[in-house]
Image (cartoon, rainbow, N blue to C red; front, side, top):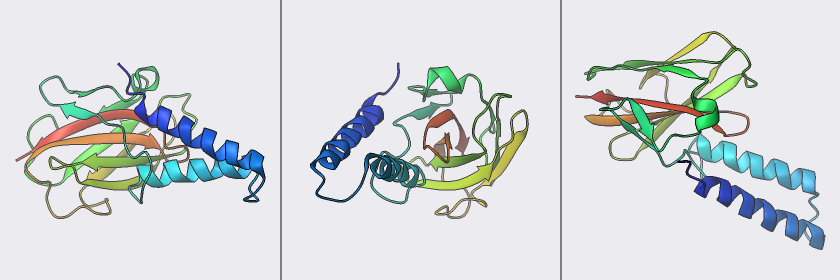
Length: 171
């Protein structure tokens, strides 16, 4: 089941911004307002401020999947790699973009067991693996991963759209 709350939030924000654009009092056209909304989504996915942020999902290590799924239409097209045994130090995370991927950059967000988020951006090429090391490559990450389950959300850097989800456990 999809979590539609972020989509509703974007649509409501767009409606409010577009409605105020019709009033003509702020000097922004519909195109500018659309770009402002996109910038807010991008910033929130990177953890830079208010906005939608990463989807409300959590990795379930017993089933090796995120609940709820980030997006059933695209997630199954993207392949991920993460440790399947409990890690006691930095971990390598990977994503394989499908051949028809229409993005060239992903934002990788790792949500720790206590809810803190660290993020990094990485270039992707269709049909090739992209790898990052957590916490080494991530802004906002401390030393070794804290004990517990970590959720990894891969999003399109340009649009903020969640692409797939994975996770790992740390001891």
